Image (cartoon, rainbow, N blue to C red; front, side, top):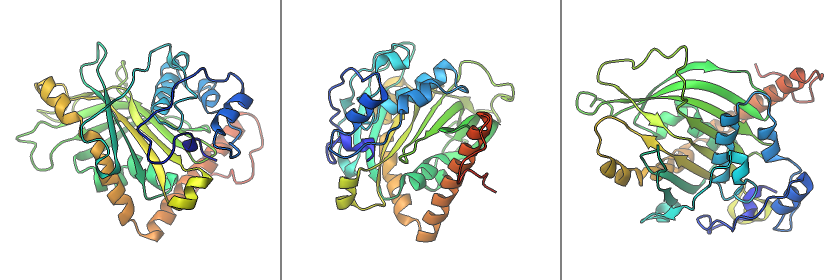
Length: 328
């Protein structure tokens, strides 16, 4: 069973009341198994909090993104994210349009812009959906404003943390840079893949300047800021699959993007409330994928997981595990 079963299909916008999370793994598994199905015996929170490669802020950022998904809302407490409060999401006008639930949180100083959240169902597996929203070649199919991605650094992988890196994304209106200034975001990214197929990614603009960051790439480009943002892609539980089929999953997207420059904040905050509607483009991109494309994306993600497990086993001094050979 996936933790997605905690929130009934069709009620994704209604988060259940938060209560004190069980401190032991057995209690957490019982919490996830509220629907009557057996839950996976995996410590989602502990695997992040105890990961040796992550800084405290990276752990808190990944857990914060995970907590915004209805699937994990009950498991993560303010203490897990540095004691910061997690204010309620306010449903936006138009929420539910095209099957996308949209909500916002007001900024807390020094933040200047809304946090936005979108929740939707995608007609693809978690592996395929995750690749659609994280790999540059696929992101360009649905995000037409993404112009370039430059990787500054990628750190070693160690399951369940599959990628820790720093990169620069460039956004703009194609062919209109003479009128609309392009924006560059230098971001740190932390990703986690869990045994039930759940994928999570947190990205944010780090406080320190990366050694390989040479500044904006061309004149009139503005260096913008990204607060903690990301995706959670979760499989449905067995009983939900009986109605929805196997080739569907739930995605939660959270965004806090400050464009900097001279854009009036009231205007930008109003426009930003439609950002989660990008999930409709993700849905359309997934629906257009051919079976052989989906199969290749699925296999690629599984190979990455297998290679990461092998690296983790080697780092722990083990001899690896079955299926843990490095992908070629």
